[in-house]
Image (cartoon, rainbow, N blue to C red; front, side):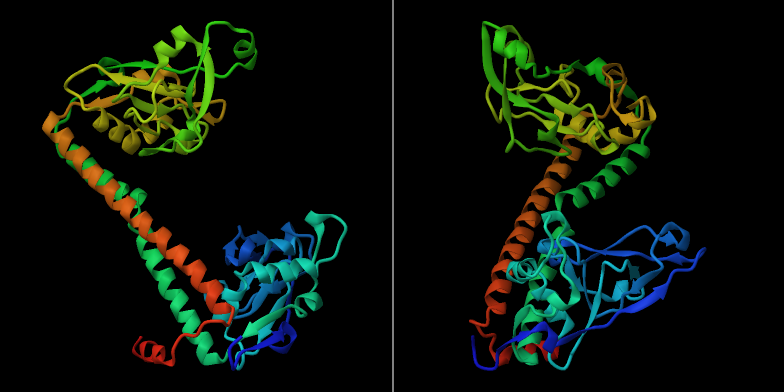
Length: 405
């Protein structure tokens, strides 16, 4: 550890400081919770005083350290951000005021994100059942931290915030956000024209897939094992084949359900967000068949581009499916008959190609943005671990950047 750094117990730089709020029937309270792994706070649904058995709650103040006593080994600890000032939490969440003359709240927030810190919390937890182990305030104050001078704390906080800013900016350019923007442009283009519609059944052959049956797989003869595409593999705008499994089916079934280049894949549902989501099969895996909860539409009309049909379904299908029979006994689900009636706009192939090209450009931009965000977060993790160890120094010349910022 470098000169100027010291190892201190939290009790030297923090003190238990709880503001108790009496619970009053008929009064509303804004409730906050603490996320695991030092990842911050979350807002819970407000409650009325009559909705809790607690007679008092704990008021949260910006800049305070707050933890959840239960399951402390999961790292449920952070510093209260400004937007949660004045919220309340149950007595399971003690609060601590920091000595800001020695420890910056922003720096303490970074310490809360370190596995070594959670390990110390775990080691001091008490209880016989893992999920019920607790850390009391006195035990937390025994935890030690590496404490640099305030100037060094500011440099570390600023450098980590810079990597966070890069990641956040990249997140705003992710595929999902861009495709939403593109879909709105498509929407306005279509609404601006006198567009005729046909049905999916009129332009494509639509079939469901097959479900696993272990008894038939074990007892059957003349079976072949092939890759098996499930609902989990079909996302809105891409296929995730990292968890692709296999299935044993009769040869004739494997032939009938084998996916072909250009097949439009659409999911049956399970919840509203999954209604009709899907993408295009482009021969990623040979001899692959699909689950019964994944519909395959094979376009046979030369006037329709499969990628356009898939983009249209992903953009506008969810609402249509939900409003036109896309639910059964409270569970969002599409039947084959409903899918056959799904309206597809008749657009010139040149217009379809333009829309597909716009979508593909958005996808590529989103892919690049995700790569940037991933790299920024990987860099952050390394920087945070190295800088909090006290083994590396940010030169004092960095202060010039802080002043200009």
